[in-house]
Image (cartoon, rainbow, N blue to C red; front, side):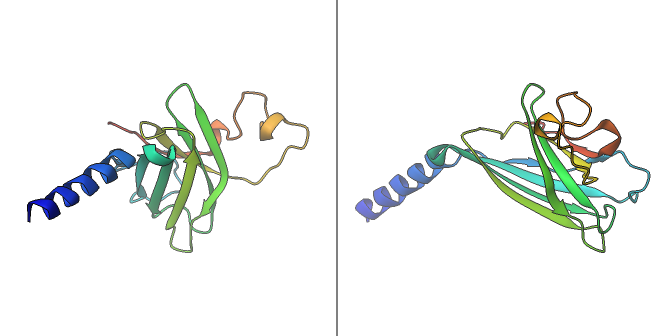
Length: 148
C-alpha cells in the first residue's frame, strides 16, 4: 500500500512540474458599438514547462456574427499577433486554440480585433501604417486582462 501511494505521489509531482498553473481570463471588456451588450469571452493560458510552450484557449459569445477576428497576446513589451485567428459563427460565438512554442505567455493579456482582411504586399509583416502592428486601433473589439 505504501509503495502504491509513493508511485501515485511521484506521478502527480512529475505531472505538476510539466504543466504550470493555468491562468484564466474570466471576462473581456468590449469596445465596439456593433457588438451586442452581452458580448463576452473567457480564455485559458497554460504554460507547459516540460514542452516549453503556452497553450491558449479562447471562447467568445455574442460578438458580431460571421466576422473574422485576430488575436493579439501582449504583456506590454512583447506582442504576438495572430491574424485570421477565428471566425464568429452566425450567432456571434467563436473559439480559438493555439500552441505557442518557446514562450511563457501565461501572464499576457488578450486583445481581439476585427480582421478586415486587408493585405499589404509592401508592408513589413503586414503592418499597413508603419506603427509596428498588423491590427489597427479602430479594429479593437475586446480586451481580456490577465490579473494573475
